[in-house]
View 1: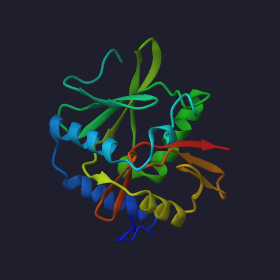
View 2: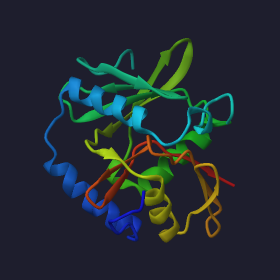
View 3: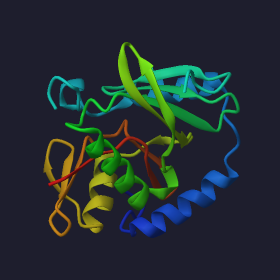
View 4: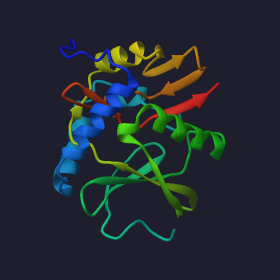
Amino acid sequence: MKSEQNFKISFEENSTKGKAMLAQQPAISFVKALAQVQRLKANSKVGQSSKKSKSIS
Amino acid sequence: MDALPPGSLYLTEGGEAKVYLSSNGELVYKVNDAGYYATWTEYFNSLLLHNLLFSNSSYQLLGFTESDDRFCAVVQQPFVEGEQASLEQIEEFLAFNGFIKARRQDYYNNEFRIVLEDMHDENVIAKDSVLFFIDTVFYIT
């Protein structure tokens, strides 16, 4: 997937923007949080064997 | 500490940590056995580097506990609502900041001789044009 947004920003700028976003972020319910975790896992483009684990670290 | 803060709910777990959502839905607690590191000093150096570079997802050490008969650190971090970053976005951002992809999802910064491992799309959240690195593994070489 080609990146359409500009991610050529410094660590500092990324963190500053992120903190401002989090300050506005409403609390999440457990159901929504769990759904996000499961969605990230299901949609990952990286195979489980390529992710860090104690057996391959 | 004897237990996690009241009302914490188990969410998921990775290679070295069990993750719980706080009762107010704003934080995650990670119970981490530092299994990716040779020493606890390495683990805390990694936390320190994370907080220096990724302060929008910074860790706070709450204490220590025992889990599955292992000594563990308990840290908290903001819960970030968003979608996964693409691998290209992660690489573009890290390259701009001096971390060059070495192998798989691992990066290296030549200037400071720092390794940053496991930067795949489950460990980085994208929200608008901001990346949140929620699970990093740093090593100083």
